[in-house]
Image (cartoon, rainbow, N blue to C red; front, side):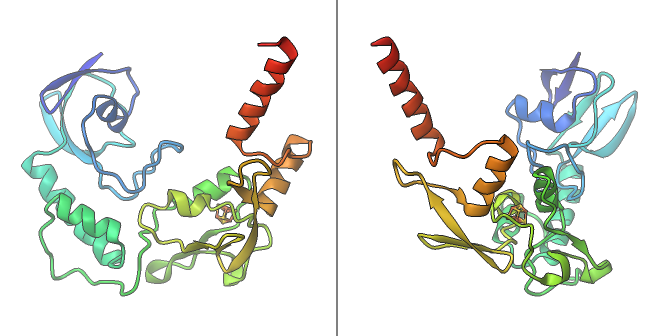
Length: 246
Ligand code: SF4
């Protein structure tokens, strides 16, 4: 099937999401809550586009909108830019401390709306990617707590979590820099807890926290070899070369 995005014919399968098709064809659509590792959530609404099909035109959220027939998509026309600008300023009011959102406001020329009430000191837009990442690991150390304006992501009772392994996946997927994680040479601190870092016995690169490696060993049913991926590959190649004399 062929659809047109900004006048460019793009090949796609029925059921593919608009965002997926656009990115595959090098067409930029901004997102905050989307991560390629997870299914679209449609929570930040930043990826809205205009869809024209069957003589009707409407604004849809591209990360969760599957294409089911020939249509024309506009990612940057006046209607989309105006609505996206308002969404960006709403997100900025929700998380005024996020430099990432401020940069997007500048990049997409979002107009100012003085009437939006700002949540001072906030960086989180409650997209939920961090909770998803943690759940994906089957850890579930963080979740959404409270409601309305007091809604936030936290560990149970805001205490250091007994199940968190300090992997930092939540901080890495956070699109607004809202999760504080700091590292020294030997330790990582996140969610109010300090974890000891383990280094590769061969090259010295950080390979994870003790808790993270213990969990990986338990799931794999075998002890870890204390090597990073690169050194492990090198060692396998060396053993192969010795065995076969190459
Ligand atoms: S650092 Fe802790 S809370 Fe964050 S994803 Fe890893 S286990 Fe979950």
